[in-house]
Image (tube, rainbow, N blue to C red; front, side, top):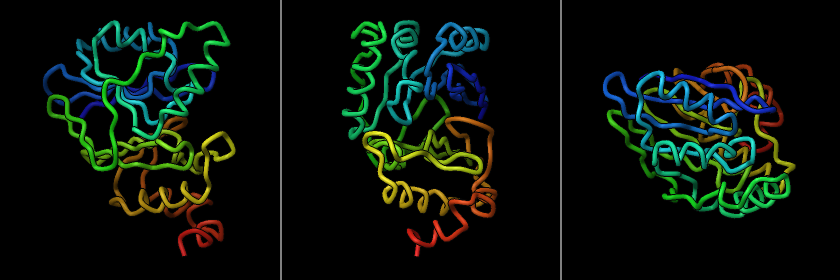
Length: 214
C-alpha cells in the first residue's frame, strides 16, 4: 500500500491519496481544500481515484469534493448518519460564498462493517461516532485512517453540534482494541500507532479513560 499525504486548508487537514503497490486505482480520503494541489499529486502519480471517502462531513474535510468528483468521476462516500452534519456544512459554506452545487449528494452511504475496494485495496468501515454522529474510520492492510476521532496524543472534540463525549470514548475503546502495531493516519497531525496511543495518549491511559472504559 502507498499512502501520500497532502496537507490542505487553513486547519491543516491530512488529505490521503491511497493506492496499491500495483495498478492505478486509488482512494482519496478527506479532500478538504486546495483541489488543484490534490489533483496535481494524483495526476503526477498517474492514479485513477475510484472513491472519495469522507471520515466525517465538517467543512475542513469536504470542501474540495466537487472539483475532485468532476475531475475523476469517483464515487463520493459518507456514513449514512452524517446527513445532518453535511447539511450544516453545506449551509455554512454557502453563507461564505460557495454554491450549493459544490456539495453534491454522496454516491454511496456506508455503515458499520461495509467494505471499500479499489484495485488491490480493501478497507472495512468502522463507525466511530462522537466527534460527529456519522464519523468513520477505515481499517485494512495494517493501517487505520481515523479522521478526527483519534490524534497523536489527543482525541476529537465533542463540543460541536452532533458531538458526544460518551459515544466518542466508546469509539476509541474499539480503536484501541485493534492490533497494537496498526499504523494510525489521523485527520490532523502526524502518524502514530495504536500501541503508542494506548500507552501515551492522556485520554486513553488516565482517569478520563477509566470513567468510560471501566
